[in-house]
Length: 400
Length: 186
Image 1 (cartoon, each protein chain N blue to C red):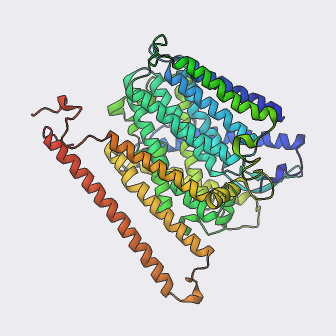
Image 2: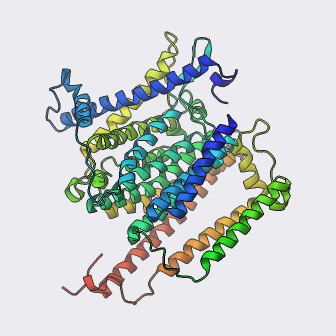
Image 3: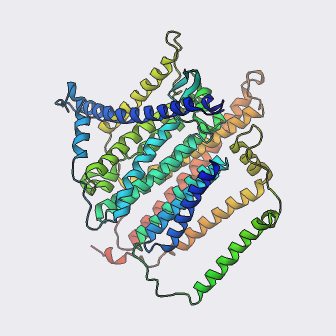
């Protein structure tokens, strides 16, 4: 179950290996963020037909490092109306969950260091993916309190938008993750990965839909474009972090990109088979790590592509998409997966030895239930919006 | 080691609890509540109730206190309260009395070692960490097999509460709108 590192008692070597793993994860995330910021700026420049950063180092690769050093030497401002303690606390509440959430991601198979076997994964807690949800619910505080404690109006508006958005999409994201847990039968990220080994990726095991729901919800969760109306420059200056400067601003910046990396790593783990890939016997322990980082790189680049392609959503479109489309669809799909899973457990007659007839019946039943479900939902939404419109017209003629 | 964990998290719980009742600013009080909930979550982990710990963080810290903060911010009640006025006469002595009575109810069974005074049984489902089954599995068996009916009844209760809140908050058709003044005829 747990990491084999802790199976034979804890001695000095075990403690040292654990500290080494913590340090490696930390350094990887920091360096990863620096490189990702550079890659994002470079890639989006290419997409927009311009050059992008090219001064510091070859192809401007040291630009993020230079920016980081600069921001550490800037003055740390405190607005006059700010709530001091909370204003100082908030950036850490955003940055710490961003770091810790990565701890549960498996980046490779077991290796042995100094006679000790260990997983290439910082921690494999029995609660697994729930830890991720807990961290993402803590991250809301960082955003929420930043806006409130700044004591000025644009940050407050931005933080109210941000927290409404994060809470709304957390529901859809959790349901999408729940369908992964349902098909795996375990919460731990390692079991989820092993269950997908080698080509049984949840992406097609679950039929693409939960993956798409996760993709949309996670993008909204980390406030990436096209869901970045939290910090829409044209309306809100800079959203919840308008008043922040210096190191604290850097923490928010760091947390945002780190969250993008973590969310992509989770998507790779949950849906894209994690570190599994073609088996190559030459240097065997190395390849899972390579596959993992390759998938991660493709995923974070897709985020840049999304940013360059899609315009920002309006607030009502955002809420409609979250509550009226994603959550109902995610719930329906979860029930569908649950039905199939129960059928599997109870040996319902849809296997090869029972012929195709029963399978067709079941598919027809599911399709019928889906039609009724989405039909009722659509009717309810239409009635609701018509009533709201009538009410608005009878009270002054302004259409809402 | 167990004592260190218990001592630290108990201190966090107590400091948070004191913060909730002593802060003048509602936002600070809500944040102290988060501290308390975290301390309790650590205590759950120390008792190997991992699932309870993480649900504590997701549900209480992640949803309920965020909702508190939302209401505090949107209604603009985030100013310090005037503690001199007592809106309900005699509620403070009553609170002290009831609090002490509750503490006595909690401490007496512990002092006499009679847990069945509290729950009616020495233990409801047995220890959570014996055998090979993970904590989550055991909890799910208890919740969805033996206690399925109370569980479903609770969820129905919650749905009723939600519908009740919607019905109460909804304006009857044809009544005056609150924001009538900004919606004048063009």
